[in-house]
Length: 301
Image 1: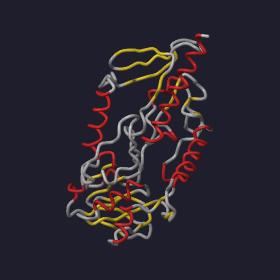
Image 2: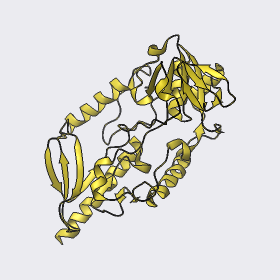
Image 3: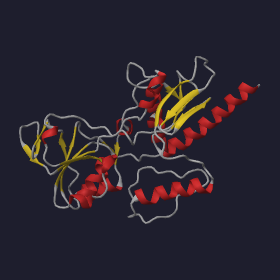
Image 4: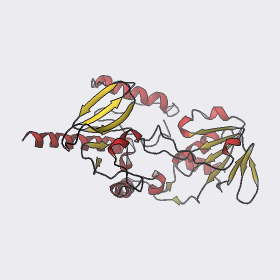
């Protein structure tokens, strides 16, 4: 819990005190479960939505939600699938030949899995640095990124967050892919980054050019052995089920403004672009409900 990135309390329920060393995967699900029970939220699970499509040609009609548990229709759909189910795996020559273990941060559980191993960590974001600091305490780590990491010494305060969110909002309004968080916010000094630096393990190397059976080949031709390659390479929006709506632009994104699809106003997207955090999702969810209530009122007048 000490290194959880930006967990924000749900409305009307503070996150309970927790041991900073406690795994967030145990603390946070219990918190969300208690919230559902406290407010009697009728969540149906497990349900896998396979498609969202227009029920007919009426622009004010219903959207049809198809799933493995049945079909629903509604005047509005709030899509809050986020990115967690779509980890991004870059491809490098020789990747399939590697005899060690490859995993994405999506599947990371504990540094204890890598005791005594040589671990190559790929990525320039917050997760990469967090896991570098954690894993380097029990294993030999080798950190690589595509670009030199530029560290911002200023505090990542409210003003910086607002600026970063505005940058992402502008991208999604144009229909561009939201991009990674780090591409907007930059890399800021954090307690785990400070700790890694102080122990001498915060050493960035250029990205390898290929993967071989027992390690990676570097741009200068040298070879770095590896038992594990950990891909801390981010996630992509989990929105394949929205494809029947035909909203994707040639640039690869959806046009979204204030959490609402510009080209399909009956669709709201929470966890897409600027709302890819618990803070942003809370605000976007609130705004979506307000917009839906206003639209329903207008329909009945």
